[in-house]
Amino acid sequence: MKLRHWLWVAFGTGLLIVGVNLVIFTVYPWARWSEDFFPGRAPSDFLQPEAWTATDDSLTFAVVGDTGSGGRNQMAVAQAMVDEYKVRPYPVVIHVGDVSYYGSIADRWKEVWVEPYGSLLDAGVEFEVATGNHELEEELSAEANEEIAQLIERTKKQGAFYKTTYGPVDFFIIDSSTPLATGAAAQEQGEWLDRELGASTARWKIAVHHHPPYGSGPKRGSNLPLREAVEPLYVEHGVDLVLTGHDHFYERTTPQQGVVYVISGAGAKVSNTGEDANFTALTREGLQFMLIEVDGDTLRAQALDENNVVFDDFTIVKDSS
Image: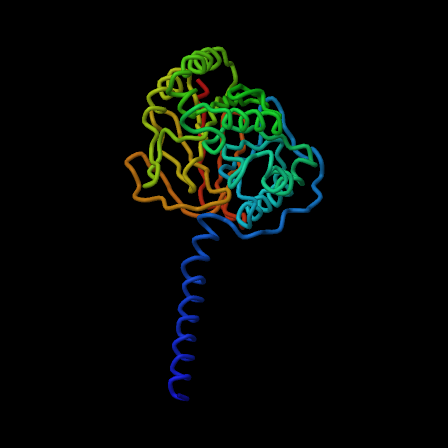
């Protein structure tokens, strides 16, 4: 009996060790990086209000997307954005969509917005936000309409799609969900986009939407119907840069008919990049955000990780002729 007892103890101990290792090496990385369930510390730094310098010819802005976990990863990226503000202050953050996971915007507003971005908001930083698929995906519904209404109200957006200007840049914030981009309601937004791009006299034109027309991710990849709908307008009207999210990694394309497309969707979760496509200039797995500086005819964009380490640095120069 004694030997049998110790054999059972040894067996149970072995199962416990296997279980602990399974959690440490399998469950924890998945939840830590892919789903971001674990709580984190929100930034609490005091930032000098309106510390930035913006002119008619210059602008610095941050870009982040797919942030809505309220967990450790989102807080880490938010802290990095706060730390970057101290060095290179910026007046606006371009958010490429997905503000709230695991529940409605109304229910999770404090966790996914007020806490991570409180320091920036208190400093007077504005947020321009594209509608993401966690607010609306394929079909209109009462629940989706309520999420859109909450997003517009709480982030003080002008609507589901709109143009906004900061210094030398016109930003075209577009709803890239199926109904408004490639579905039954697409004509209204398409006509608006064509008209506003054509009327813009800004030195720089940047389009912002959630779904990427170009992407090499194995889970989602390129949204080809969206590409067919918007790319001709971007080329015709001289759009310089397109900022998107949806896939939870970073990807920059080579210029496609003169337009550079960027996925900046690792603001809280991380997913695999897969193999590079023929349009890929650079991909990277890992948490990240961006800081972009426009000065006259030059746009310099940097992608940074949660430790403020720059891993991509590219420049677009306008033809001054």
